[in-house]
Every structure is written in C-alpha cells, then in structure tokens.
Image (tube, rainbow, N blue to C red):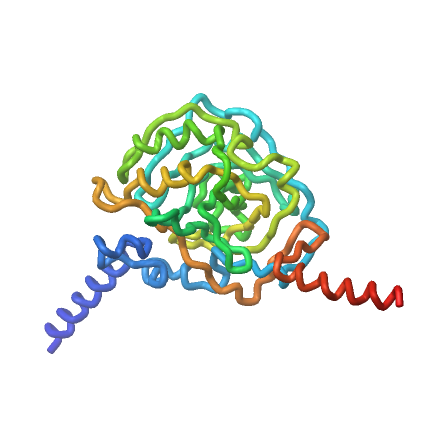
Length: 317
C-alpha cells in the first residue's frame, strides 16, 4: 500500500512539474503547438496572470476621470541616439529592441523618474483585403492596426527582476499605430525585419532617437493613465500604464511587413500574427485622463446638434 502511495505521489509531482513548465503562446500558435497555454490559460503558466489588475484593457471614454496632476512628460535623451547600434531580436513572441537606459521620462504624474529599457510591438493578421487589428488596448471597443510599447523601469533599479517586485516599478508608454502616410523614420527598422524573421534571430542596426518613432512632443499631452500589468507572462502587476491618444502613423505596406515577414517558429512554418493579449476586466480600477476637455465620440457629438438647434430656437421665439 505504501508503495502504491509513493508511486501516485511521484506521478502527481511529475504532472505538476510538467504543468509548471508549460509554454505560453498566443491563440494563433495553437495550430502548430496544441499543448501550449493560450491567453485564457496563462494563469496555469503563472498565477500572476489570473490576478485582478491585468492588462491590456478597453478604455471607455465616458467613464474616465480627469486628474489634474497628469501634466506633460519630460523626455530626457529621447532626441539623441544613446548607443552606436541597437540589437533587434525575434524572441518568438514579438520583435524587441533592448535599450541602454540612458533615455528617461519624468513628469506626467509619475512619482519617480524612469529609464527606457526596451520597446516592442503587437500586431494583427493579414487578410485577403487589408488586415485585422492587432493593438492590445482599445478605445470604446475600437482597436488599431498595431501597438508600440516602450518599457521603462525606476531609475534606481539595475534589473527588471527588481522592478517587477515593486508597485509602479515599471512605467510603460503605449502608442497606437494606425495606417496612413508612409513613415520614413521607420524605414531602417522595417527593412531589417527580413533578417530577424525566425525565432532566436537577431541583428544589429543603427540606433535612432526614440522621439523619431513616436508622435511629436506637442501631441503627447493627451493620454490615459491606469495601474496594470505586463501583457505577457509573468503578467506582473507592477506597471504604471500611459496610453497616448495621438497615434503613430505607418503606411499599410509598412504594417504588412510585420504581419508577413516574421515567424513564431525557428523556421518559416508559422507566421507571427495576432500576437496580442485580449483585453482584461477593469474591475475596481479607475482610468484617468490628462486633458480637461472631453472629446465626444462622433456619434454622440451628432446627437448634440439637434438639441442645440432646439435650444437656440427657444431663445429667439
């Protein structure tokens, strides 16, 4: 009897160890990796992913609250190239560029100064006509073509492992990307995607000023703020999120380069598409906005016009 108990215990231990080592993935990877944990099961990979203040979220604009201390950011070192080159890496989930930490942000309602440590992208899928959106956050249910995240950690920390253990240890700037005119500032980064097509590949490229990749500074005063998490396992709830209202503009062909040239796998068998986490419940959190004026959605703004006309007619009767 004791022998049977020991056998069952060892089997349970082996099963638990295997589950703990389960690989996380996006839903678009399930066709070739059926045993991986897609976003709804990320809590089985790491319990943090099942907590109550997760990211991304859907921002409902008529429920956000104005917060007066959300002033403009200060950007240090964003206007220069901090190092001779960047290393761009396909890590099997996205393309990521590690940064030296010499570029910093302050102000913006942050209680500390934060240094930039990396940036990466999320995107959707190529369709017969156009593409499906791939941003992680959404505004009133509307998602954008892509989303850029610039990750910062408190300047006092030397490793991200230290930062994720502290409330507001990280500050992430989120930028929506929508299609429009071609963006010449992204030319060199997009051209190198071919050389990091498969998982594990990396390539050096000439570094760029971070400000060249984002909207002009004067357009970065309107943003949303909330407390959340990293959007990939281990989903640590240590992030001050800033989502800017002004989007980055790329041409459709530039967006399609991300959708077509990159692969989840170590060979070109599975294209890297739909690499975003679905929105998570807001719960008891509050989303704040920096601008005192409330920009109404077009449909609601149109409903105001007949009311104004009616009120004016009463005044002049």
